[in-house]
Amino acid sequence: MMKEYLGLFGVDVAIKKLRPGAEFALYNTTFTMWECPNGSEPPSWDEINEQIQKDMEAINTKVEEV
Image 1: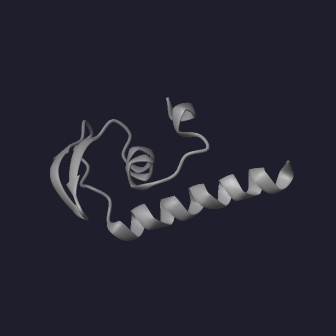
Image 2: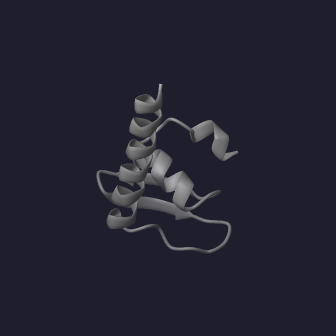
């Protein structure tokens, strides 16, 4: 399932990677709806930004290899 997010980055993708299976709605940086099958809390914006950075670095690494 995570294969569908390979090569992508952004807030939605980061949240889906950090909390697989969670359903959510955002308004700016506020979660207006959060439902996670494992009962986890929404990720912090620090976690989300870190995941976005990792994803961007992974894409940049792949581009440099080509």
